[in-house]
Length: 595
Image (tube, rainbow, N blue to C red; front, side, top):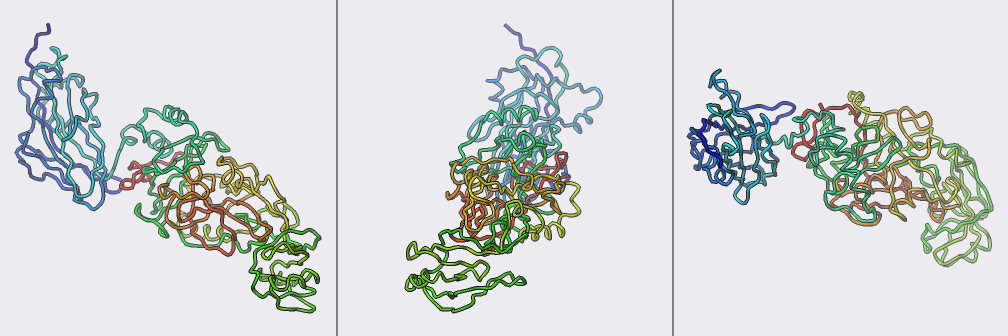
């Protein structure tokens, strides 16, 4: 039987509140003894109160080692957190050495080994944690306090039953620290200085980046045919460099404050750089405020090259005998039909000649087909159609005549900026040029590879690879197969002026979006339609290019017309792998702040 001895253990508890303002945080201290339920500190909208119970603090003299069952019955030191704000606040409670109290005690004060000091933190409902001290600063609890509410806590400390003679006549001085609006400072405290490393270990507080990578990889591949409506955290997929780690679902901890704007992390790229999408100026921004404006994707949509983030206007007049169906017209509307045509090399438009009549397809299709008449229908004479057959009251057999690309290689040669690229470049020049040293030169994939079609002929349907991946198979990828589609500053075949572009449909799918399925829970949802840089298909029946967008409902949608539609633009950039953070945990109240 172990004989209990009495030891001197003095525990001094001081309440401290830490307000994080910008990069630094202020440490405010005050002796709490005798506060009797009054507010001891108020920083911003959060108060720390000392309750009546334990208001004299904890001072154990002639302490006797106790079993945990006895220690848990000791009178607690009780304190409350009161949130007067209209929004929820995140906080972390720590128990730390009180070095000031130790210095006042003098040189004769020796400290009790941490392993012999036991503690318990509880709230009104449950015991939250019981353990021995392990260091000069330990995390007691991390939580979120709801708006206009109070969280109450009880802290008990006692001498372990295992204490031996080495603890005699020794002391322990402790203090409570509450970190507010800074969120979980696990990364800062544990030496994970870069955003690249911190985003991996933050979710589960892993002790190393490698362990975090192993745990993320072990989760496997999610079912991309299903929308992600909860916070599924991080997953791994290979990109063109190495393993990439991407966020999926209703993510709450991927906010970043950089260059005066708020961003959401899409993924850590294979080289460790961080891909982010613009999300406004405040974490509460939504809808149009999460974008830099609206734009069409390109200046034309009748030529197959128009899905290019950059494209080539090596065009020629193409007259051929190839036919296709066409139904992008109103069968009861009157259109001009002629027996001949001319082409203007300056305006690049067609003009009807010969005998010209105003006819409707529904009433006059026999005359139109018999005469093999020409018409621009509703295409403003950018494309001309020779009508050679009847399919139905709503579909015509035509021979398109176009001023368009000569070959697939010509169509994907990158010489001219798209409209959306010009808008992004202008915004970058005005807002981010002074931050270029922070940004990595990463690939933005404008995937124009195709399994079906020609990639350039206006009378033939083309289905791009992403059509099969996103719409048919739900198997997105982070790889980019063609050199001409890998847009970056250092790629002469697809050279960017600035390291900025758009998100891909594959990245949206990995984040939890699904074709034609609503998802207003994904972190990419903003309530308004915005562009991706991923082509879907070219439709010869409409003579129109189709791009993927993120719809106002959060679904991945195929949108016809890269010229006729105006959608939001959300810039995407990449931070270098060695960029450090000064604070934050990625939450909306404490975004990762770039140092």
